[in-house]
Image (spheres, rainbow, N blue to C red):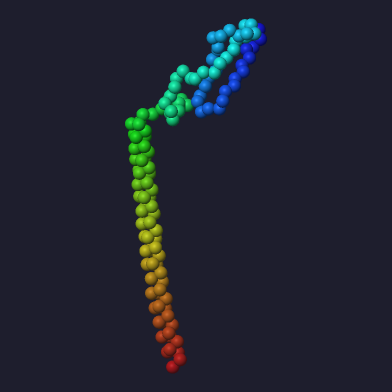
Length: 125
């Protein structure tokens, strides 16, 4: 049995169309003909059907998801801020220790310089 032949011509429009078997008898025997008709389920203009039914969310679900994401972001930000403050305290403590060590070195060097000056001055006399 030969396959049905479909010939479709229409002007370009933005409407969706579908092919449907024609109720008129074909002139070439038992080969069916097809005609273009508008889809049976019409959506309001500007509304598109989602890819899968599971991806449809109500405004309340979208708001809850946005709230959940915001809370998660805020929690992560608090943790990051806490870690940043901890690292800053550690860095400041390290700098304070370094200052103390350098002050001790400076004091020791000043005393050594005084001792050498005294030694040099007494030898010169």
